[in-house]
Length: 95
Image (cartoon, rainbow, N blue to C red; front, side):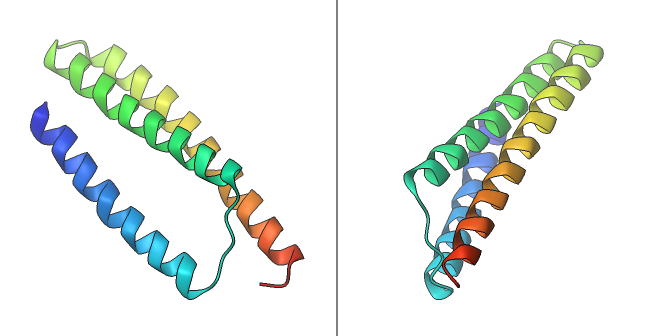
């Protein structure tokens, strides 16, 4: 379990650094709501990984699939809403 959490954190750090540099290069403006939604996405994705791994270790495959599907879809929904908010706000300002 610790290895999976470590790999998730490592991947998240690499992705976050890449996104931060891309936002700075293209001068994309982010509001506090964007940071909050990104944090909610990270918590949902991490929670999904945590539950799927826990249920898989306990040999409850149906619960692992269900929790992975629920957390995954919710995380993708939050990510999509965040993406659209950022695009619309920056499109209005001409970036």
